[in-house]
Length: 258
Ligand code: 13P
Image (tube, rainbow, N blue to C red):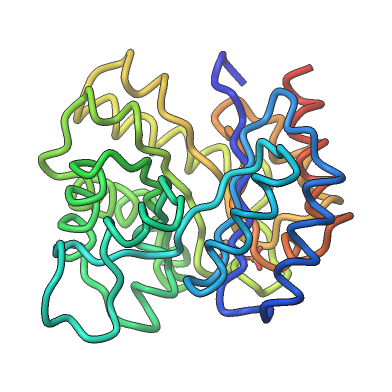
């Protein structure tokens, strides 16, 4: 896995209520040492601060990130959350362009690009999520779709800023479906994404960017996926809601680098 420190994210999506979130955070803080792996969880907005407090009180290295942000600093944007609000509640990582934002809410690449710029300008780390739909894969358009989402999402982002960007490749057909890309298919897509980054930036920048895989990653398949040379971690939905499963995936990531 080159020299890139693996990064594992737990996207809690619109799941859990306060006590569940606190219990999960407490369990994770007890189970996860974080040695050799960067771990971030993405709770729903109302639980960012209480979950961050659990990790702080337990001196856990687990970080808290937001599932989305808005690019405007303040004003008449009902229902949106600004980056400075996220900073107020102890958050410095933000997920942008998740497939559920793209395909359920209808976010376009131009908005995603505005969010990426706003987040980087505010000093955040960004996890930019990309990935193809099933019909796009079946039409042989996987790399084409990924290139488009990378190029449009990162338009105007400098090579220097890329040090704070992680790409999450999440084939939409694998999210929450129990269908996982084979390690070979995922590796092929990741290598192509890295090639795209090399084209936009340069080899050094492309080699340094971490590319996470997401889509039905579980303890049973994490090891084989994470062993691929261009898979630098995972972004996990369902399996991140159970302490044992999420901890096992983190252990698999640590094992790959050990
Ligand atoms: P699942 O792990 O539930 O497939 O979700 C993946 C995901 O969307 C993470 O962002």
